[in-house]
Length: 325
Image (cartoon, rainbow, N blue to C red; front, top):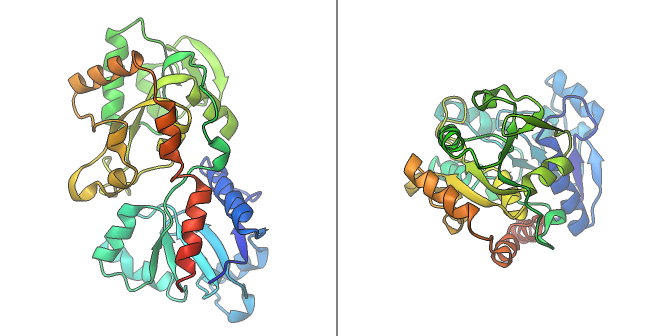
C-alpha cells in the first residue's frame, strides 16, 4: 500500500492544545513520503452530519489520517482507502464492538500507543492492526546545550502524586527556583495561562508550541507521569504522551512515575528506566531531585536515544509496514 495524501483538520474551528503536535507529525509524513497535506473536505462533514455512507464521497486514493480519539467517528472515513491512526484510545469491553464497526472497511487501523496495541490484540480485535508510536518532530533534534535558568520547570499535565511531592519539596527547599502555571501551589488544576517564578513573578503566557518548548528547555529538571492513574476515561490505560520526548529534547532531567509489569508496555517501549526509576515515595522524589540538580545531563546519550523516536524514523517504519499489505 502506498499513501498518496494526508487528510488534516488544520485551520478549522475548535482547535485544541494537541493539534500543533499533530500538524508537526503530518508535515514530517508529507516531507518524508513526498505527498501533500490536504484539508479534510467540507462535504465529508456534511455527509457525516447526515450519517450517510456512500462510496461516491471518496476518497479514491490511499489517504492517511490522524484520529484524535477512539470514540471519534466520521462516516465517510470508514473507507478502504483511509488509513486511520488512533491517538487516544480508552474503549472498554462494551465499547469495543462499536469501535470495530466504525473501522470495518479500513484495510488497517494504526494505534499510537504500544499499550493500546497489546490491549486490542489481547481482546482478539478483528481489525488488522498496526503500531505507529508517538514520536517527536525532527525539528526538535538536539543540536546544542540548552541554557538553564531555573531549577524546576513544569509544563503540561502533572501527575497528581508527583505534584504532591513537588509541593512538599519546594516548601522545604525555598532556595530552589521553579516555574509553573498559576501563582499558587495548590492551583495546578485550574489551567491558568500565566506562568510564575516561585509563585511571585509572572513571566507571561504560553500561547505557541515554540514558547512551550523554549520554556521547558530552561529547566534543569521536570516531572513526568503516564496517563492511567487518575479516575476518569483514561483510568487503567497507561499511555505515554509525547511530552516525554519533548522533555528529553529540551535536555532536562526527568523524575517519572509509570507502571511496571504487564501495564508498563509504553514505559518499556520508550525505556523510561534509562532516565528515571518510577518514583512512588516522597523520599525517593527528594533524592531524585537533589541528584538531578547537581548532575549534568548526558546530552550525547539523549541525542542517541531520540534518533529512534523522531517522526522521520517512524515514517520509514510505517512505509515498511504498509509494504506488507
